[in-house]
Length: 348
Ligand SMILES: [Mg+2]
Image 1 (tube, rainbow, N blue to C red):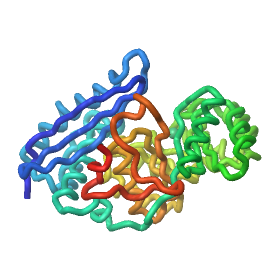
Image 2: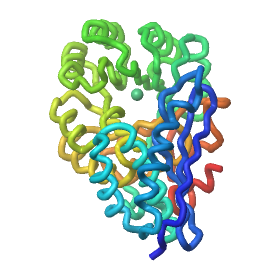
Image 3: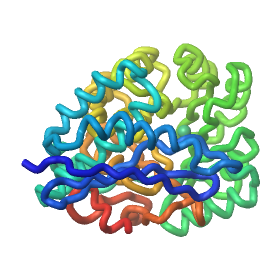
């Protein structure tokens, strides 16, 4: 078995978004690519908030992995988990672990000459329905134009990151019932505000209402929003451990579970979350908002789970979008990228 020879971390930024890329090289020269969480978008200092995550990989994680067998991914995951727990079992250390873990899976599958999904047990789905995830745009004309652009690509579902109900009404009135609409407010509201917002849009055929409450992990209050508005709730992108997901699911607040692969600990953690998704019988819709290894890894995961409902496709343009290509999209559905590993060769 090959050993881990080098781990390289690169932060790339396009104002205001950043990406944290991880490249692992094994002793046979094969490389694997991963991606850690990207920090918080900031126009005044693009990329700065990603630096602590990159530093965690370089200074805490890499020294524990160099020279170790590259294919013993579970062993490395547990060793890092056991070590990193002393910092915290949520947050920056686990974000760094995620990037490294994804790269190790890509590396192993490339050495085997098969797609990652095959190591996860194979494809349950040939394709998954996609929704275009619009960034916060704060302008109705732009929201309509970007929705139109998605529909021209065959995508008939969009997610808004807007905190005013007007946007939902405009989209429904403009595009009719052909369009599925998700609304994500990123924890913008308190209970009263979230309930008022939800009641305002409840008759407009909303697929889900995402992270309605501040703070985002206040499960009990999210449950109240679900009960008072009658809307399906989506959440989970700010949860980390299996225990966190268990608490969220036990609260019976969500219909759609959205783990973020760059926060939970990568594909190794995804394997641990799968049984919970089935046990609580909720729909899996991996969270993602970067075009890169994170999105590609999420697709392999989603393809391997019978519980998958939707795939989030970041609908971002220009310098926001980074340098990688979207995965194959046809008739509004995402297909597995071609090639071994995560299929990232087709993304460059
Ligand atoms: Mg969200």
